[in-house]
Image (cartoon, rainbow, N blue to C red):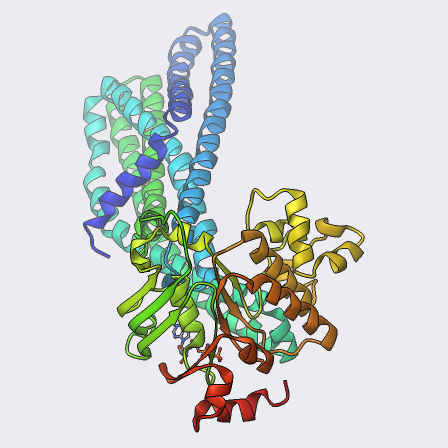
Length: 581
Ligand SMILES: Nc1ncnc2c1ncn2[C@@H]1O[C@H](COP(=O)(O)OP(=O)(O)OP(=O)(O)O)[C@@H](O)[C@H]1O
């Protein structure tokens, strides 16, 4: 983090506030009003002491008291309105910020998510933006109020006694030095606190979403310990930050109070010499307390703003991050035949750039052809599927669709034309209907049902009392494996893609469910170019062609019977793996 980045961040923080200019201006108006009222009080005090008490005038006292009550009433009303305008603006700012940040997050390339834990990212959405909200709303309000009070107070002080005022202002230079010194360190520690909190959040998120595995391994205590460890680390840094803030605030507020003591001392001497009235000294003291309180409020805020600016750096970094793969833009083909070619494709995952996963892979799928990929675990089968759906781009070589390189096509258009059914399909925690509609958001109810029928899902869905409105639970936990697969197939049917990428489930379903899934898949594949990561003998036998992958290389290719006639990996795989299927 460079030192130079700090003013930019503060400016951007204020820039966020600018969007709520109207509310904030209204807030500022009421703020100035209430600050002005606060400055009236010492004048009233001076009046009561010097005029009313001096003249022993009861009516003066009554009038002064009534006037004060009126002033306080206006001040309280203005304060309430100020608070309401500023907090509303703050809420709106943070809402917009969260929205923009989320939009930026979901636009990032898939490789980005290989390297970031979701819990850490959600922590930026919630914890970091919360700190910012405070900074840009209430803090600005308080800063302005303190600033206005300090300025007004100073003007009145100067009017009452220029000499005393200069005496008081002697505290300013040391406070400025402390501000610069502490500010930078507070900002840096704040960034570390938020990072540590995000890490803790990452652990919590991982454990809660994987609670079944944790339970199965009776690892609750271990996980709680892991979380506690992260929290302890966050706490240690937070304590450091709080020590810094405390030292800063304590030293600056001491400076303010010491200045008031000096003013009292010198002012009393002036009064003894008859150069200042009793009321004058009293109001001067009240003003100087007001001013020093306002100044210490400002330093307090500076500490807060530095804290927020530490968070802001993290948020803005994310907000500004340009995905390495755009999510839209590019060519859209008028008509899609569905011919796929991989030409000398080499690939390594960005998270592990030194480990090549695919070496010079050549592969072709003719329109309507069903090609099965087989190979030992880790051979790179899913990686090929990932490249075809353009989750990643090849390091070298090309992936072509109807002769056009995938990179040149509009990713949004492309993904609308590719259907995928994953090994363990992920459903969202909403209704079955919503989950199927994920295939095509504008599908009618009739189309939805037709898709479910084609996927052999309609029957089990109808048996639920809530039918299509049945909620499936987080990630679809309330459905069986076979049911989830059929919902995923219905999604793909609804999408009606030219190209299909299927990852056959390895876990065995019972015979009936297996049959229903299989039948639905066959119906789905009809007339579409299909790449299928095969785990079943029936699939490879039914495929037009089988491609055998080993260590990221295509080692054999041909139909089942041809490959069975050859000495090679395929025959060994079939004998070893598919025999039981
Ligand atoms: N997101 C990722 N980041 C880094 N490396 C990865 C990632 N996904 C997979 N790999 C690595 O790439 C290699 C190929 O993985 P891939 O998932 O393509 O294999 P596969 O043939 O589909 O295996 P399986 O049959 O077990 O699913 C493996 O060595 C794996 O460790």
